[in-house]
Length: 273
Length: 197
Ligand SMILES: C[S@@+](CC[C@H](N)C(=O)[O-])C[C@H]1O[C@@H](n2cnc3c(N)ncnc32)[C@H](O)[C@@H]1O
Image 1: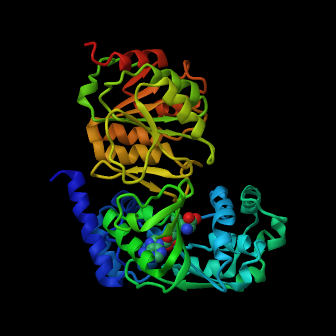
Image 2: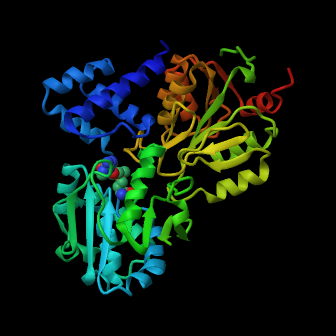
Image 3: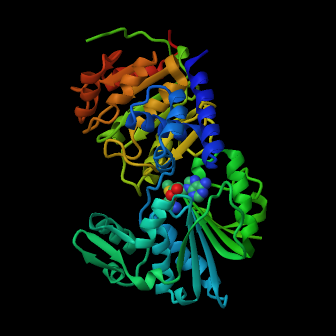
């Protein structure tokens, strides 16, 4: 058998085994990225063949954590794509403000940087007090970090620049306390954010959201899974609710495409018809 | 220097190019001479600041007969196009020859990383891939070239003496026995007249 084809089936068998054993379903993730993650695991654990991963999984209990950590790519930053946040501020906030209370679902929040970025925008626009942000991810380690809201001071310089580009109205240092080499997010920002575990593949919808953000998560899914998750978002939004996806993601050729109008095409913000 | 200088473009299915500092001029020179019927898709990783790229496309599209665009996720790779990795994302290739994007850790301090694209491309296109390293001031891409070679693909490096920044092609040359080392002008000549032979 050709090497790639054989690897292909081995990958599928491994993903099936993970699903059977842990209930984590990576079977419809985009394969190229999954393959890289498996190769990383092989390197880390000095495992030569993919087929050797399965017995390893059954022997070594901590191995499952490593798999999840490896497959869940939690790289994120505050105010990633500052223009996007500027657009939220200018184009979405005026609509949100018309509601007596606002419910936001932030899916795939990783270690929380984006959720806090959004909280800052809402605070500066005087909306935060009537907002609840449900920030979810399927990675508990990332969620713990998100709840703690402690980030490295090294990153703060870049975050500060992005905050300014996003139209920040104050000094970014108002939102954290520096301690040793860390920046601790101010408690007032944490108040209305609930971090919770939710798996987009296997868990059900969240009701009645005014805005859903899910950025840089759909790129890891194949078309089938992307479609399924987009439908989950569609059914979790109120009539005229907003959906924001990553700047390199799109609703094109998805089954919900026709149900949404673009509000800001470049920044990938859509509104349910 | 090895000069198995004659290769037939039609033996291949895709070209990947890695380029960093000095890339703007080098790519303009190379791409502006490619004819409209150039038969292979070209996929480029250029190290670039994460919020800049618009100008590059505008500029290249003005000077180039082929379509120059950012690679979209899940887009099918087709001849007639020159695709660029979007800034701040790694560019991957699926078995079915569509693109995927990822925002995982930087590789060689870079995202997009040349090594990441080259490795993926080599696994998909095998010996039907041409890998090219041009001017640059770091060593991203050297490992990728090794993997392209290992999979039977053709490796080409710009002659470091000809490169505005020699480090990148030199690192590839130091790591792999490169198939063809040539000047940008020679490469341009090869590609623009691909059906001359
Ligand atoms: C690259 S991060 C994106 C973080 C952030 N949204 C951003 O754009 O900066 C992708 C996140 O998606 C999460 N994720 C992947 N698959 C998931 C799933 N099935 N359910 C919930 N979260 C998932 C990962 O754990 C990871 O934290």
